[in-house]
Length: 150
Image (cartoon, rainbow, N blue to C red; front, side):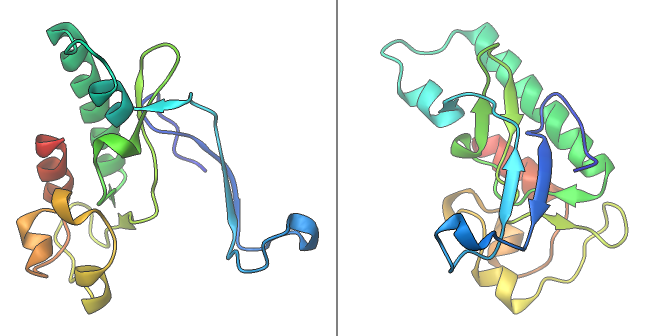
């Protein structure tokens, strides 16, 4: 909730306690996030009859890079960068969302040991960096790879 950046979806509150009258007893918690808009980058790219203009591609790419740079400067790796996890605001600004797979690195941007659980679960297989698929470890490089194929 302390991370604020124009290219990151802001977390307003998070809890592992769910109100009894919420209706879904199987829920393990809730995350309340800012409302960005009703479309993501995947819908924006593939939902248009016309290809996106180059200046829009460049602006979107810049937004994502600025968001990743901010996360990485706080030793956070997202580990699931893909078009569906980038929301596009009504002002046409990209914001990185869905931090369900993210990790805080122990030593800044250094590689940290990966658990067997993480090597098999989490993230989108088609967007995972080769080193993660091999179970070699986690670093900010994984997000850069995923961004590159996004």
